[in-house]
Amino acid sequence: MTLSSAPGKVYLLGEHAVVYGEPTVLCAIEQRARVGVQRRDDGKLRVNAEDLSLDGFTVEYDGTADEGPDIDVSESLLDAAMGYVDGAIEQVRDVTGNDEVGFDVTIESDIPLGAGLGSSAAVVVAAIDAATRELGVTLETDELAERAYRTEYQVQDGQASRADTFCSATGGAVRVEGDDCRSLEAPEVPIVIGFDGGAGDTGKLVAGVRDLREEYGFAADTIAAIGDVVRNGEAALADGDLEELGRLMNFNHGLLSALGVSSRSLDTMVWAARDAGAYGAKLIGAGGGGCIAALDPTPETETALSFTPGCEDAFRAELAETGVERLE
Ligand code: MEV
Image (cartoon, rainbow, N blue to C red; front, side):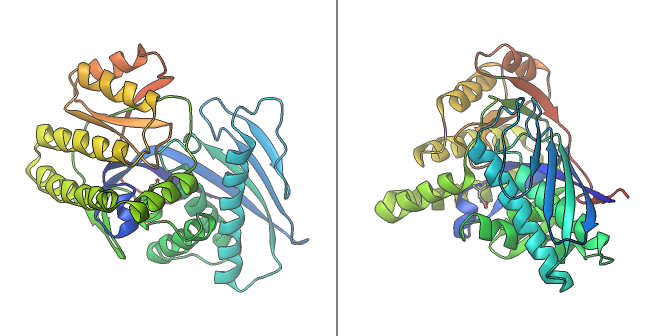
């Protein structure tokens, strides 16, 4: 058995617009996916996944996803997760030149599925790393990030940025603009997460934004405006100006709402955080449901969120300095 882990992430600013070449800034967080891999000689892929949502479930997967009694995520979400694992193993076969190899794959994750915290990127990065090492190949971080990006690109029908996978592979804080991915001096950012217990379908949400952009010039302008917000946010981060960063997060949330990717529960959590005194708050990741991030160095926002109807979990996110970790 070869075991790797990779972190989830929080977008400080810039999701969705990054798909169209605008810049984005995001941080890896200490919520991780751990993927254990054992080679099989019969060419089959078997996946045993535990705790892919905060409530936890177990699934045996050998080509079709069967819902077990404790599964509380939709079958389509589960299928999507298994699609990422299939895609990751395809990359492993490609990079190692071993087309026939099969694997037993075990996934444990602290990161809820489809909730905006980068569960799929973390699973893909850890799976590619563990499975290549199981075959005696250790990839450089850049190659690992590239292979993980190709997996997301394929699974999301050609609509993915390099941001999630690069951040999960390298850890720390990163800036991504098109093909240009780089690490940033890790900022001291006090991030509180609110989770509504739900999830969004990244592929569908990204496609919805694409449709709006094609139909309305002002939707394209909204995407460009998110790029401007990010450029301003970079200056605020460099100055350590949390109040300004918070204001920009509020702006970013409004623009994402205009693009149709917020939801009632995400908006409710964002307003609860603002009312509690957070510098700013926004939905994170693809949206549709899942998580918000708020900036607050005090305990007020976390406490307020934990009493907010519709908020299932509230916690502080710690920056993950390291990306992929080779555990066994
Ligand atoms: C999803 O975590 C982030 C999006 O910007 C899609 C992507 O960057 O691939 C919505």
